[in-house]
Length: 149
Length: 399
Image 1 (cartoon, rainbow over the protein chains, first blue to last red):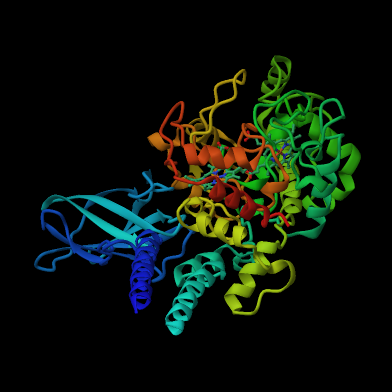
Image 2: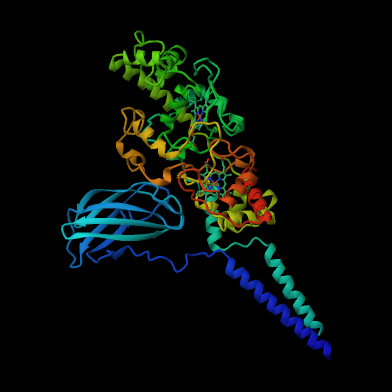
């Protein structure tokens, strides 16, 4: 009879080992998505809530590795288009400590608070950030968009 | 009691079996599919070179690429360094033409898809690139009026069928160039503007013909591509498309823990961008600061996209227009090379710093700081087995 206890003990030991192995595998496995995922919304309040900004590709889809035009739309809280804004653009990949591969510029004002941002290019998949410094008659503010490819 | 021991044995067997099978997460499968040659989009037209897809231009370009007459002393052609049977490179740490250069010859498969050329990207089109070695004193060491005379004498008819009438060169000096010796520069400066412009146009057309030829140099299918295709279609892998456990481990590391795929991405295993990876300089070579010094050169190049010799609309010049001109990360940043075929063409890096893939992987694991600027590479915890697996995986891109 003593032997059954031996088997049970051995069984428990092996089960514990299995749990241990599984834990290691799961804890070290590369995560398929980003931890907690950055906020990728395309419309945001600027940092000091001066404007509401939207940032989206002009032709709808993001194409990796290609120069693209995006549109930055700026409105006040009350929904009034922001005109004549000066816009400076920076950004990069926070996890790879490098900046944008191009230097995008606001090249055109299309009316209705919409600014064409040309020269946007995301060379690799992953988490990108695009930062805008906006200065208009209503004041200066900044906004950061996350783009995950 | 029996069943218990059997059950336990079965459990252990199940766990062990799970390790050997090539099981990939959905995210891994997606990444692997993005690396396969079948994901390579068709080559886009080059509107800055209206002869890019003209067969007669490519044929002339091919002749010029292999013609040693295209050099000062008649001994060097593009193919002296870009050898057709060696992936269009020469297996040397630094190329040797008329003189000993400071950089390694780059292989050319798929090069027409890049926005920037040379290790530092100091040219912005394939045709503008081709003009540079022709006048580099260490490479072909010629000068542009000599090339114009040579084309007229040797290939006049073929040239004119493609590009139209050659200019009258009877008053053009035999040797003159804005980049040559003092005598050549003086001769160039003495030429009337329209004559210089005529010669520049012939020179640009030489580049356009060579570029048309280079567009046909494309990467070939490898064992990795056959493996990736079977994985994507769910077909059972057969023959040489079957990956060993070590190759699978290497692939998983490449797209996972070792982070290689962040820069070596897409079907050409390159993001076509510039990165400082902390590769040390070679003693005795002149200082080399990579991309940061190339920005000024490409802006100043009269054959760049904004120059007078571009065909088509300036809308094609986005890369030059929106080029990053000043950023600390450009210091000692070099173009990410494709890894297709890399295993069979050592040495590696922009000046042949490493002589084997083992050395390359050791470099990435250690991630020494850059002598100047900041390396983007971070140290990796890799066991000996994992390092070997990465190398074994890279070899599947050459088979």
